[in-house]
Figure (cartoon, rainbow, N blue to C red):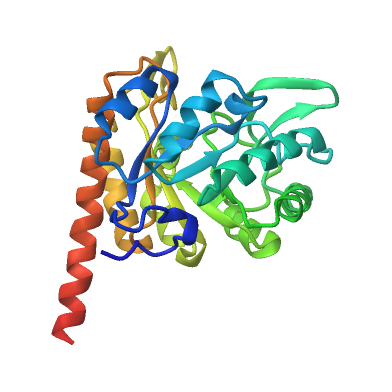
Length: 299
């Protein structure tokens, strides 16, 4: 079996093993389990900031990397900050890239640092020409430092700005065009925002340019009731909701067999539950792949 589209050589490190497009986030709770059980998943993803400086976490990652392709999904570059990306952060990140050879490297369309203050959150940005330029400058700085393309993920937000000059999907397309990066499309984020901000999530997907999408994320969210209504919160502590699976199926039809990750960061269940969610994502990908094969055979 050949690798799915969009994979570079590092996505297929074991010559005798087929590549599955669906993977899971590797968390400390599952270090021993994943090494012992070796589940049938396509790849693993970690936040590189958890592996700066060596130590036990990095030793486990090295063992897991022998079994699976790896994606590094950052949370600390603060690409949207009104300041250059911190060079020491990039240096430590690049060290991990050189050691583990990830097939994908990514971060978020957000900001989390200002001066010497570093915030434990991914904060929203106004969708303006000024923000676009600042973000692209930082993406280009990172890509030049790493010597490779990165992916940027659409955010999960709970406020919008009256100063917005374009929609989020327009903003994502223009980032990719201007900075020469790719897009990590978080399907749960789109659904959460569609409810919170009142837009059609399918319209969003239909207006993201397929050539930019090189990865998708799936996760669970939580409903929180307030006096003036319900808000969805991107908590990553639940199974993927049916509404998100339906939106993902639409995404697979539009974007193809892009690598897809199951994210689960809170109330972490047994490894088997993450693998089951990954298997479900893989079933959508396989169905699409089979349909494409049959369509080509009929031509």
